[in-house]
Length: 128
Image 1: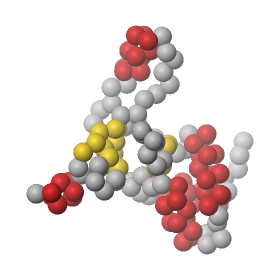
Image 2 (image 1 turned 135 degrees about the vertical axis):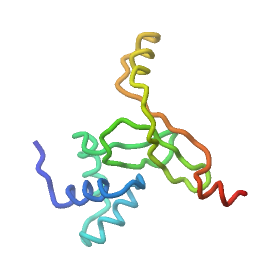
Image 3 (image 1 turned 180 degrees about the horizontal axis):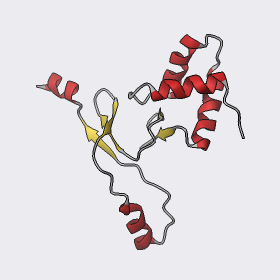
């Protein structure tokens, strides 16, 4: 079992306290304010551990820059095509889809990610 380090705790606390889905580099910049001598490599290593233990999730859809969150509930996301921000969607998730896809294809489906795309409210109002 891996021990919880000060750095790891700072990363988890940061992710639990935000809904912005930050990138690893953003996490580094924010945690650096609390732990000035932290290295980027330490942040990346700790994110890897946190992913392995299931304490955080990685959003990496269609080759975009990975973003991270600590939200445990299964949920979907909306990505703004203009500003790039990612938002949680408060809509029930069809958990039966994994089973249906597995039955149709014979694949062993562990999970899926659903991402909606378009313009967020702010960017949409700028277009009008």
